[in-house]
Length: 78
Image (tube, rainbow, N blue to C red; front, top):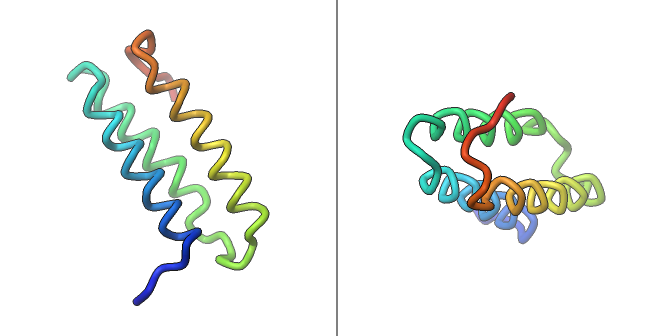
């Protein structure tokens, strides 16, 4: 199965999120991973052809990743 460009972007963002989780302290790492999974799981049933919504969520996800990736963020509350 070939993936569209947008699908590749979503997978890339997900992998980036999981990579950033590995940089967090051991005690809070599972919470970061659970949060990342939950955020992507919320929209798993989204219509693949709803490009506007997908692009919006990608932008939002990148901004969130930038915030959570900062060194000052040690833990996350869900």
